[in-house]
Image 1 (cartoon, one colour):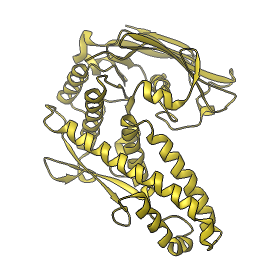
Image 2: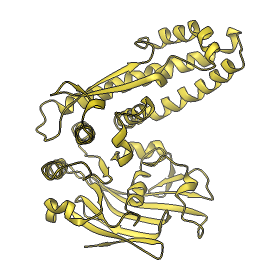
Image 3: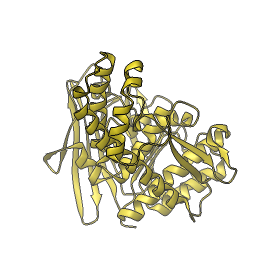
Image 4: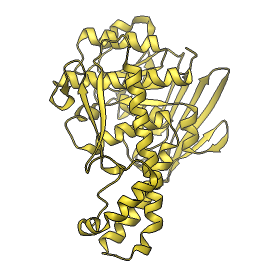
Length: 367
């Protein structure tokens, strides 16, 4: 596998880190330290090298170290085959974050085309037992990893739906107000549904025949009101037909925003929501690894993996299996835990940093 990894990561006034720099060599990265030391903050900084709001999904202003700075910055040197790229992303005074690649202003979409970043965080442990919104968000991150244009389609759909919902709440019945919005929603919505289903197929393909200690998951995309119409024209017609019901509800009741991702433990034919806590965690790890394998097969480059407190709910055998799979993929995985002993099976295959907090200031030092 051809290497893609961060050679350097710098944080300036990001969360608890006034200034932190890590020099890296492509091996998996272990960050260990006490709770609250700032380990997850480093993973969040890496997540800002991808499109969107990062692994915590918060506004740029919330990432700023207070009260001593008007903004924050994350800088990285990305090694890719035959070339290195300087990446900077920052926010000043709480404004929307900006991106610069190799000294030139760039869009977040350009980040998505340059590298893929996947993550698994403790909040996702409840993915199979909570509401459909979190599962849609998880699926959309997977879809975005395969298709960077998915973000623009989703924004287009959501913007048009907000305008349509405003009309619905105002009890506007004149069809002339709806036509253009519904056409826009249908075009984007149909593409969103197609891309999501393609991403699920990629995950299934990456699980089939893979030798792994983690259970395979069967995934199905369902919609609250039955299957979504198969093309943009049919979806536009369904939106028009459903207007009276939508006006009564004050919101749009059909579309990809009503989708849900259902999963089951394939070998046991058991719904993920009914599995044990450990099995649910193992299914999530399995899907993240499948996503990474599929991307590596498609692009020839493994994504970056961010695995926060990944050892939680995994026994020693599965931890060792996870580390072996990460190394086999050739991915630069960033992993956090409270103690270095949790990663003992990695040995010299990983770079290890201790993250400490002194007088409210976090920093990382190599070990």
